[in-house]
Amino acid sequence: MAFINIPGQLESKAYLSRLIEEDRVPHALLFSGPEGNGKLAYALLFSIGLLCEVKEGIEFCEECNQCTKSTKFIHPDLHFTFPVCSKDGKKREDTTSTDFLQSWRKFLEHNPYGGMTQWVKFLGYENKNFNINVTECNQIIKSLSLRRYEGRYKIQIIWGAEHLAKEGNRLLKLIEEPTPNTLIILVTDRQDLLLNTILSRCQVFRAPPFMDEEVETFLEEKISSSQKVQEIVRLANGDLRMANELAGNQEEGWNDTLLQIFRFCFLGKVSEMIAQAEMLASLPKKDMESFCLYTLHFLKEYMRVVHLQSTESVRLSDAEKATTLKMTKVINIAMANQVAQLMESNIKNLHRNANKKILWTNTMFEIEGIFKAEKIAV
Ligand SMILES: [Zn+2]
Picture (cartoon, rainbow, N blue to C red):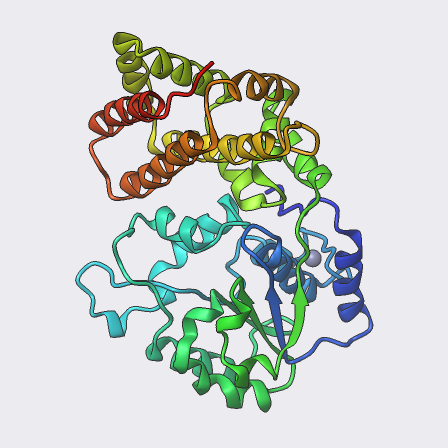
């Protein structure tokens, strides 16, 4: 498989490689940073690099006996723990990561930059509570006390470590007095929610955010249209999780669709508004969500244009900038704000599986109403 390729960030890669090459691997490592950065991808590369028989550092050969297993996430010395929920009538207290391991492996292949929201969505259990329970912590303690099978290290990755809550205290002894060649890797985007007792015992690696050029490199392998790449780069704003999601969505950009909708609603052209609502309602849910996200991004930048009376330094394409200048004559900040709120509630309602046709038809008439009520002199 074409393995996880983190774009750019040479310094971070060199730093992690040196830990392995110079034999300075700590007992407990925390990979942290906001959603959409490379912390989980780094944790995977670090673990696989550590197990590889041929190469040193986070570069690995992908071919040795260890790599063939670890790159498929089936290495017997590479364990994963992550937040889960109840499943198939099994009691929650008996359910652990093991019950979701196959889905987890697919998730890692599909989106190693994903966060909790993507994981929950990926499983399709959007109304359930996710956490890491006592049974799971006891399992970790048990499995790490066993001998390693074949690797140089026994590695336990705990993703979403903020979901350990108080149960994390059970792991303290393990982190303080680890068995030799054992590594615990915690991954979190909420370092502030980790128990201090755990945090203070970990060496912290903060994965940096991605630069626009790095997001661009990442997208160029997935998308042929350079216009679409540029649009996603601006929307993602360094968040590779979002870039990956948007890349999987429709090929064309949303700019023209949004402008048409605004035009029809402004002019009160009912049959065209309904046609747009039907078009949106016919899309897969992820595309509808991507449209809402695009609209939110566009309006945020639009409000900046109105404030600054300039299109410099806003994250919009030249075509979008030209449009915003025309819009300032007819759409004020209050209107833009109300439409943004509408899109935010649309995202929530989509997650709650609202009726799509009703949702988008209402959206059109609400936008029309906002424009009508606030209409300013042209
Ligand atoms: Zn190898």
